[in-house]
Image (cartoon, rainbow, N blue to C red):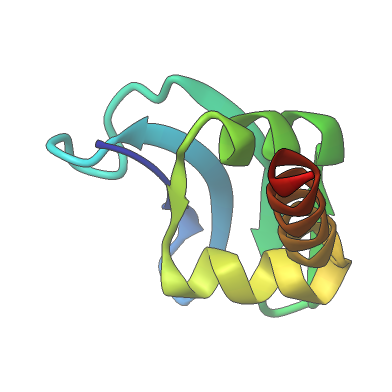
Length: 93
């Protein structure tokens, strides 16, 4: 199963995270399939490649709870949900 999750980097007491796509059977800090962005909770900075994130979500990658919150904060998860609903209604017609 492919997941979108946070991989911790940074020094002791100053965490920063990479938002990565990886196989759920591997540890988060192992080699990732793709890197989507980064998050710094201390300075509250967030950068995500929106196109790549939507591509992986449409291909079935499941975001972790914390990544889902970050995607919602940027508005990416709402775009994904809207596109999913639009595809479902188009399929009915």
